Length: 250
Image 1 (spheres, rainbow, N blue to C red):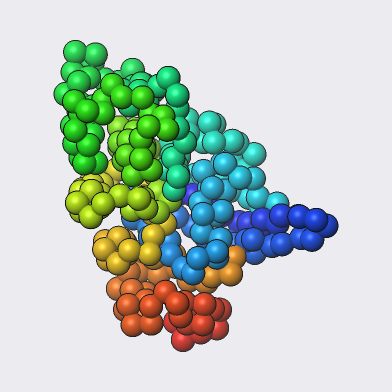
Image 2: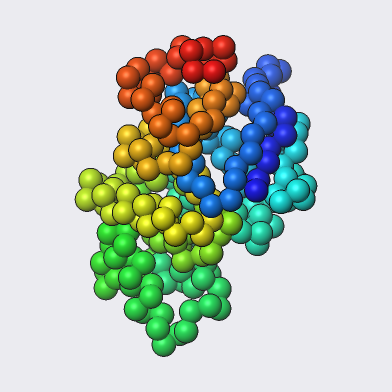
């Protein structure tokens, strides 16, 4: 289980302090599928990056199975089984998709079966292995292509917690359909916690629980059947009003 205790994050620009996250406390249970949603600019990506170790909170603690990991960076947390898929994946000049998949899988894959295994991963995210397995992951790829290769690297790792920041961004409808199938399979296997930041109804519908982030606060965590009807009724534009603390759902 991963627990956040009183997490806040403040930035300072030109002498002005802005509080991005405000005293967030919540627990993410093992082997659950969480969808995190809320108005744009509400702090969802910042919160996900704090969980992954990309950003250090200004105050508060992060505990994994009761152990304080607040000061551990993204590399140390990756070793503990926490993975992060960026909304805009980084490019790697001189590294191929095969190289990234090898790094992600470690030494677990038999080299003789590498082409078959990595090729299947690329097919699952909607890419032809013959075209992409030995292609450089550089600026020649579109944003959607880079995104799908990064998701493939996430799939070949055995993670305690896999975090996806708007995985549907920049991919076509066919690839999005494949992505939904991947998430459904991962959810059904119950082999780790999945946290997906998304506004997509199909992703919200498959979640075990939905996390609402509004104005830097987690205003609600609840079962999908409890939260989703309110979202579908009001729409994202009304989340700030509907799900603020003290609202009808609390």
